[in-house]
Image (cartoon, rainbow, N blue to C red; front, side, top):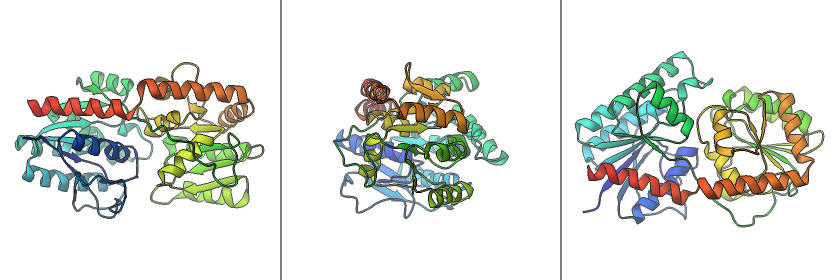
Length: 366
């Protein structure tokens, strides 16, 4: 009899919102192909039901919740957990420690749980004191009630070993190696600087927007992303692009091919994420062979390794590092070769999917 798994804590399948959703788009069909009965819980309006790449073997369940910045994860996690408790899959893959509050319900029903703890959410500047308290409490609940944990970086693993005395399995994110794709109209190969990120302070977006004005004096700047809810950073990016023809603010892009093409042909991709762990956006940029300048953090250094280009989180340092790499074609090529090799060695979806399968299989066997 096939084992069953429910995936809780994402926007659904197939969805293109963020890292968890990308992982589920890769993992759910893989597990179905391995003989698992897979159910992915999601939210109304957040998936592409007509996606031609959708795997019909993956079952989807839409539950209700409150669509807001502070309550969406908790409310949808609750309703999905209640539904899963009724249907009783063998294993639940739970994304995000905010859903740790609902693990006792799943445990009470005899459902084994594998929890991807994500980043250190209570370190994120975008959350207020109440949200940080909720995430930290959810982490304590996760440490107590989860059967096994997934850490997407060694530094996150170290934090959980130290702060919560829990072990788990290290599973990062993967990247797609794309075919040769056309250059975005109006741009040239290796001729522009690129930033791709959600518009939140800890992704160094305010500093990059200031740096973009300096970079744009020499090179085109392409900015991809949004806050998801509107706000001052979205407005700043829009106004910057309006008054400077060398700045292109494209907003959120859900077209994978277009986004991969932007990475593939960028002269420099700036990665400003400061908290989290192994960032899916960074890994994907590496897989496309994009020359990268990253904010100097323990997480980014872990993923990029020795020989990568780093900068400090201020506009002057960002502009200097980006322009320096843009002006040196030989260094661009060396940087491209370096990150592509690391992606092939350590950050492939084949390896990621296999590691999740093995972790779920161990719990199912129990």
